Length: 190
Length: 332
Image 1: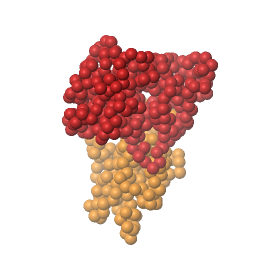
Image 2: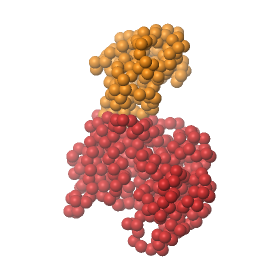
Image 3: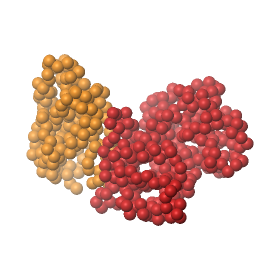
Image 4: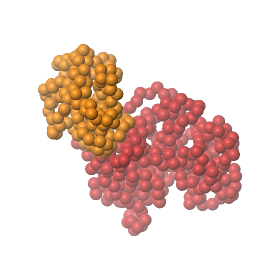
């Protein structure tokens, strides 16, 4: 099932072709950010955030590889252990794997997530990255920026900005783990 | 039976008192979570802020080195605030009851209690006196669930030629033969392991002198033998238990030498069973349960058990800490 029965669709924000076009643009923006004079090891590395950010990061890596012939290092980050909201929940969120197969120290990183909202997950991800080492820089890519930030977090690369209200949710669906590609704005019926 | 159940994403229990009432899926959730915490232990900064603001007390009414150390390390690696209590030199020696000790500690706003006590049921009793989350770190000869969970975690990481690696890895022990050897009657480790291993599908054999096998043990659905050869034949993993000299008020076996002769695992066994792996909850009495060469051989996974202990305890603390201090918390 692509969307839960509790979700009332208000708008489809992207279909498969839109998503692909947006990712092509984001891949080009990442490449523009590359420093051609840098040693390969000092170049960018992509870090996808569990779970859908990982698949977005993988697609971006593949696009950069096929267009530029560049194989960027790629890692997976799960920031669950760094979240600040566990006292508000009755159960702990499931911890997913973190797998960063390269040295973070002095590396220029692009952190990739599907949706940026309050900024709290990004804050957790930054803390997690800092515990893994001292990157030279971290840029942040979000496919959808839905506004309503509670922390001073700003993406460097944005797929699309969509103003939302707190009762709404943005659903990003990716064929790797969902039935199809697409992005929807929904209202959750409690 | 154990394979088809869907993955769950939360424990169905508020406390960890024993593995008797935990389901296979809850055990597998703990395994999956422990694997992620195991990765944290390999980082340069071996600490995550998951339990920041949570206060944990370690209530140890019985001497313990490694379990207490392992719990304390797990709590600190999760950034919890940790208070240690051991009965020596405390008000317990002034005659304070467990209930009063616990109530006083809870009045100090403790969120989680880890308890080791000589009386079976002490952890369960505690859940009826106080509101904190309780983790049993060993209650008499009853249960020691985190030890069994770390043993299970170690088994799940084994690379055994008879099994596809993913099978054990996901906590499916169907077809796995585990023999537990030693003083079963006095062992809470054995009891927790029997329950946990059986739930995951393993076949358990118990082996020891008849004086150390509890009566009616067959009722647990295990194979029982008093001959070491029978226990090791066809066995994938042998779990040797420590002969608890301090619990032994005499007369269960003639001498340590004779015990080693009949029930100690020696190098000859490793040669005869080339795929056999050896576990031991520690501390090992070298030359009693295990020959020294067996302890040090590459077939022994005793030190992985110790490393896994911290990760498994982190997973248990993490999974049980959900909802602490949450508004409208259901204390069922």
